[in-house]
Structures are given as C-alpha cells and as structure tokens.
View (cartoon, rainbow, N blue to C red):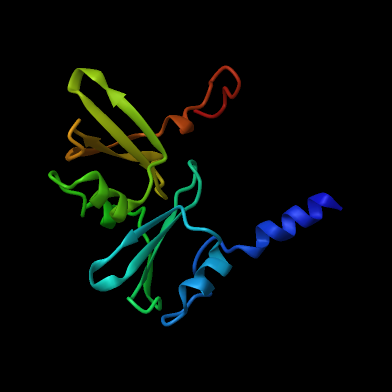
Amino acid sequence: MLPAVVLAAACATGYAPSALKPGDSIQTAVQQMGQPTGEFPQAGGGRRLEYARGPYGKHTYMLDFDAQGRLIGSQQVLTETSFARVQAGMTVDQLRQTLGRPARVWGVRYHDQTVWSYRYDTPFCQLFHVGITPAGVVEDTSFGPDPACDVDERRFPLMR
C-alpha cells in the first residue's frame, strides 16, 4: 500500500508546467509543480521560480510572475538558445537566473576556475560548461562529452 501512496504523491506534482496558463497564480504553480528549486526577484516586483529536474535531468523550467503573482511566461532553459545568452562578465547570480542550478560543479586548478556543467537534450550526449572565476564571474563557456554516456566496452562489447 505504501508504494502506491508514494507513487500517487509523485504524480501529484507535474514535471513540466504544461497545464499552467498565463494569469495563473504562484500558488497554482506550486500546487502543480511542487516547491521550486530556486526563486529570484525580478524587476518591477516580479519573481522567477526555478524548477530543475534532477542532477541527471535535462530540463530546467523557469516560471516568471508579475508583481501581483500572476504567471506571465514559462520556458525550458537548458537549450542551446539559452546557452548562447551566457556571456563572459555575467555574475553567478545572473547565470543561475538564466540556466538554474548546474548538474555538476567541479574545479579546474590549473586555470583557477570553478566549472558549472549542465546536461540537456541533445543527440550528441554532451554537456554545456561554464567557467567561473574565483570572483564569481563567468569567464568562458564550452561544450564537452558527458561522462555519464561512457560505455564500459568490457561489459557491453557490441555497443561501439
């Protein structure tokens, strides 16, 4: 009985904001989507809610609300179009508001950077990387292979 209750609770929160429409309240969004993984103030008193879908998830949804708490738009931000908006000189706060939380954070000592890596839907099994200086400023970006896609050829010899 307990697994059925857990499954029902998991289904109660939506993965994507597809059922939300412009004008819906923040409370309606939270009822459908669950608690956000981030929240950011916007110009004019609005708010942006982040819904990152797991460290291996390839989707992060940003929901924008006006000062009255009404939905004005939503988008899935882990896309190459959004990645193109990430520019050298952005702060980590601006980066977080643009792409949400990263899937992985790691250091590159020889370059004195912290790298935020983002998974996303792509047929090439790659990550988007953002290099951040110790001062918390974006220095550069790149794409690279996703190590989660590596196949152990000893276990799967036909998967070449």
